[in-house]
Image 1: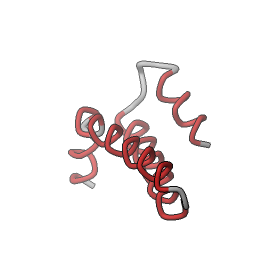
Image 2: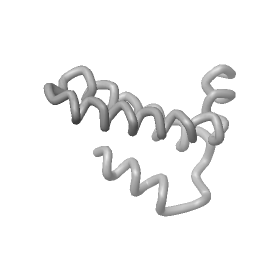
Image 3: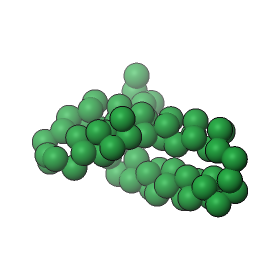
Image 4: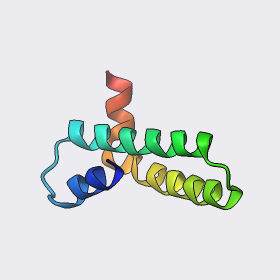
Length: 70
Protein backbone atom coordinates (compact mmCIF):
# COMPACT_ATOMS: atom_id res chain seq x y z
CA UNK A 1 0.00 0.00 0.00
CA UNK A 2 2.96 2.30 0.60
CA UNK A 3 3.88 2.12 -3.09
CA UNK A 4 0.29 2.83 -4.13
CA UNK A 5 0.18 5.94 -1.93
CA UNK A 6 3.44 7.23 -3.42
CA UNK A 7 2.20 6.56 -6.95
CA UNK A 8 -1.06 8.38 -6.21
CA UNK A 9 0.85 11.44 -5.04
CA UNK A 10 3.16 11.51 -8.02
CA UNK A 11 0.72 10.77 -10.84
CA UNK A 12 -1.01 14.12 -10.88
CA UNK A 13 -0.47 17.68 -9.79
CA UNK A 14 -4.19 18.17 -9.15
CA UNK A 15 -4.61 16.43 -5.82
CA UNK A 16 -6.83 18.19 -3.33
CA UNK A 17 -5.51 19.33 0.03
CA UNK A 18 -7.63 16.66 1.67
CA UNK A 19 -6.05 13.92 -0.47
CA UNK A 20 -2.53 15.18 0.16
CA UNK A 21 -2.97 15.33 3.92
CA UNK A 22 -4.52 11.86 4.03
CA UNK A 23 -1.68 10.40 1.97
CA UNK A 24 1.03 12.07 4.08
CA UNK A 25 -0.63 10.89 7.30
CA UNK A 26 -0.99 7.38 5.89
CA UNK A 27 2.67 7.21 4.87
CA UNK A 28 3.91 8.59 8.19
CA UNK A 29 1.74 6.09 10.09
CA UNK A 30 3.12 3.19 8.04
CA UNK A 31 6.68 4.32 8.72
CA UNK A 32 6.00 4.74 12.45
CA UNK A 33 4.50 1.24 12.64
CA UNK A 34 7.49 -0.12 10.76
CA UNK A 35 9.89 1.59 13.18
CA UNK A 36 8.03 0.04 16.13
CA UNK A 37 8.28 -3.49 14.72
CA UNK A 38 11.64 -3.49 12.91
CA UNK A 39 14.46 -5.39 14.55
CA UNK A 40 17.46 -4.06 12.67
CA UNK A 41 18.94 -0.76 13.84
CA UNK A 42 20.04 0.01 10.29
CA UNK A 43 16.51 -0.42 8.97
CA UNK A 44 15.10 1.65 11.83
CA UNK A 45 17.56 4.45 11.00
CA UNK A 46 16.53 4.39 7.33
CA UNK A 47 12.84 4.47 8.29
CA UNK A 48 13.46 7.41 10.63
CA UNK A 49 15.21 9.26 7.80
CA UNK A 50 12.22 8.58 5.53
CA UNK A 51 9.87 9.94 8.20
CA UNK A 52 12.03 13.05 8.63
CA UNK A 53 12.01 13.63 4.88
CA UNK A 54 8.22 13.31 4.68
CA UNK A 55 7.79 15.68 7.61
CA UNK A 56 9.92 18.28 5.79
CA UNK A 57 7.38 18.35 2.96
CA UNK A 58 4.24 17.99 5.10
CA UNK A 59 4.07 21.69 6.14
CA UNK A 60 4.66 22.74 2.52
CA UNK A 61 1.48 20.85 1.57
CA UNK A 62 -0.47 22.97 4.09
CA UNK A 63 -1.19 19.73 5.92
CA UNK A 64 -0.34 21.33 9.23
CA UNK A 65 -2.88 24.09 8.67
CA UNK A 66 -5.46 21.53 7.54
CA UNK A 67 -4.91 19.32 10.59
CA UNK A 68 -5.24 22.28 12.96
CA UNK A 69 -8.44 23.47 11.32
CA UNK A 70 -10.34 20.20 11.72
